[in-house]
Image (cartoon, rainbow, N blue to C red; front, side, top):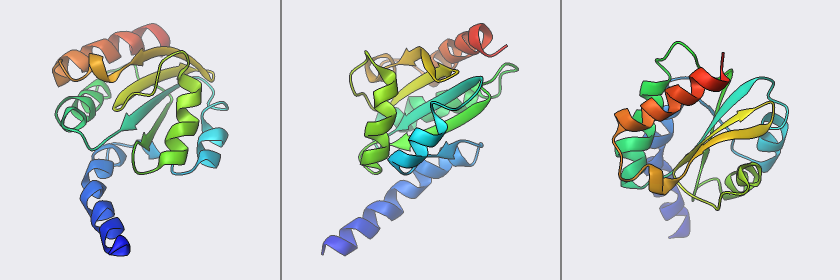
Length: 144
């Protein structure tokens, strides 16, 4: 039963993963990948903490997609999947202090340091366009 459930969950979340990877966002699946990429990413890095919740589907992922159409963009694009790649997500969240764990959420880092963060409570009551506007303002500030 457990193996069936795990495969079912994997099949169910794959389109949620693909929504970001299809636009060039790299999945970090292990704590080692997070440790290798985040602190060593020169320039700017966007890190999306993906999730199966409705606000990830309706606001977060579409907002990120819209924002990445902007002229100024981060040098690196990463994602971890909360509830699926738990260890990788926990490792990524170490870089988001002082913010508590939140999913979905969106972090913008510059040379390995957090410079902008959008928590779940700032995603769930806003439109994708409002999230994209906040991200593009942060991109204009930090990614030029």
